[in-house]
Image (cartoon, rainbow, N blue to C red):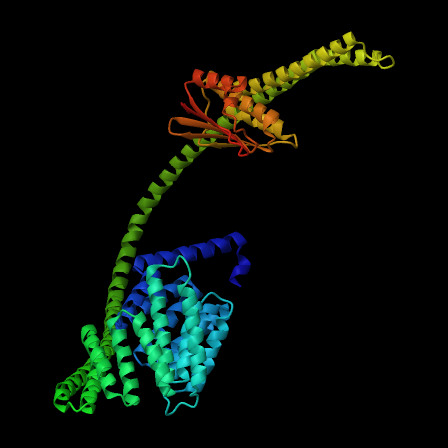
Length: 615
């Protein structure tokens, strides 16, 4: 109903002001949602999830104020991922669903693909393999025909893991399906890695993903009890990696295969190597499992005494990992507690503020009554002063209107004088056409008619030819005089504009004129020489260039005036052309006005002349 009383212009103004106010509000509040989003990503990658939630949430609020639905969906997705890392799966699913609804309404396929993948991960972690499979397949479907190959490979890997993880309570165990999806993921990583022009960091990340795929192959063959194949893929992955933690995990995998195939000594060797790398990487959970496996291998090879320190180390790191987890949980609870406490303090502060506002309101009412009484006493004197100011302002306005009227009358007189001058110029042109051209063309016509029956004699032909040549010369002279008159009266820009209109009336050549920061008159000789230079270049274009475009540009920068003239003709590779009479005339005119010039005419690339003059 509101818009029915508003014009279209007012509606546009209303929304423009609203957008500006929204931007100013964000700027004044110090919120930069893009920067907050990137900061949240940094904290998420560092596993500092409370800080990541803070910046992601602030980015979400900023995107909502700016009404950017695609950005809003992205922030909701990221918040859902952080809650997933914090094992708060209900909140993680809630934010993923909110993000999905926006992406689905926009039909934004990459966003839908990420939502389906993340929801599949939530279902997989909570052991709902049926829903996990459904969402992984939806993610693959959404990723069809869009350039999200790396995300598609991640989805395929997760779907492959679904067919091999949790073997005791997983109804979807299928090693062939796992191999199928792991192989599809590896092929994508390999194709992306072989692309040219990718950064070193991305190349390294893709190589790491290929190593992970080889490790997945080893996992499948290990579960299938095909130990030779498992060892092949684990060792192949080991040869590709230079990361201590990854190599420690692979050595542990190799040790597990040797242990299952009843080869305790080979198992012991692999565990020793893995343990050394785990100590180097300082990853506690890997040290914990490898110290236990190493101790078991020592016992299996009749070295129980040597196993004792490793059992002790296993227990120590087990306690350390447990304590780290408890500390992490305590930190999370502390964050939640502090957030709730701050909210409570905020409510209490708001209540105190409201009470203070009520007290202040009472005082303000009393003061307002006092001020109103005082204002009534003062108003009479102020009103009289205001009337005096208005009367003075009206006098000034009347004077200004009289001045404007006089200026308008002067403009009309100037316009009338201009029109009278144009009329005189037209009359003079008509007389010249009649007196000079009319008589010459009439004489030529008479001689042509006289020789119609018997043909022209050589003397008559020469006479007619001379008459036509004189007519052409007179036409050119009249035209030049007319344009020179425009140049004298109205200046260089007006004369060039007339020249443009005269030539452009033909279908053969389109002339453009562009002026930048130049609207003044030059000394008479400078304007004349610059105009003749343009005429000479235009004449050359018409005669030789076979061009269909001729561009003139006048640009002033400070005290420097630059005239650029160019066509799109055939040019010439013959540098000797610059020695022609026309070019020499241009050089002479350039020297006379103290200018500099440059000339280029490459074969099949047009001709360009640039004249630079200090004014």
